[in-house]
Amino acid sequence: MKLFLVHAGFYDANVSGGFYESHTNYFVVAKDVKEAKSRAKEIKEYKIKKMHIDGIKEVDVVDGYKIELEKYDNLDDSGSSDYSYDEVKNI
Image (cartoon, rainbow, N blue to C red):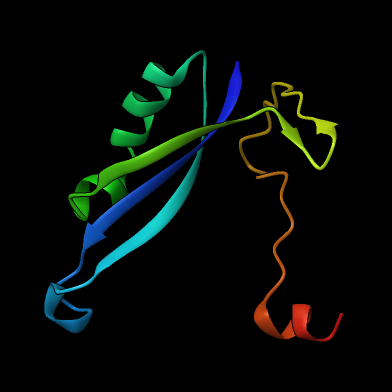
């Protein structure tokens, strides 16, 4: 499996009357780019906001470090750490 960054765009009527395109990014794990596209299109928020895909990037190396995915079965734990605006500001 590979890691993909999906860059999605959408128009939100609640932001400047929907005049400007907003964007968000999703990380998706898939066997190839075609499957990554399909998986992104199944994300609930993607469907609700009627998003479109502006680009997909396979992420395999970052700053000279190879990304290797390992199956993680503990669904109760995201395995991630989040840092708020204030926390980051104070680091």
